[in-house]
Length: 97
Image (tube, rainbow, N blue to C red; front, side, top):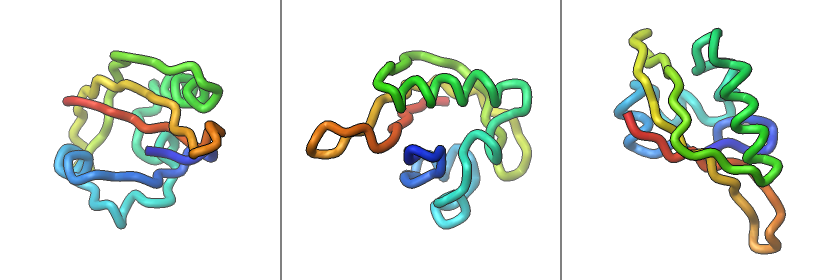
């Protein structure tokens, strides 16, 4: 998951297994700028920005680079995260490799 600034604030064990990055290595870092392939940065940022405005995306495929620089194609659902007052506070990304 990311916050409203695009910084990682959730990283589960499966994300760590797939990417090779531990939770402590990614927390607080910009997801798009630091973990997405250059040619996909703009489109992935658009998908995440849309979710931050309440427009969710399902089944979006993009490449993620692992810690050892392997490319993995990920299928992503970008879901808006809201607080208990229904304010948008971030995005939860549910992905599968």
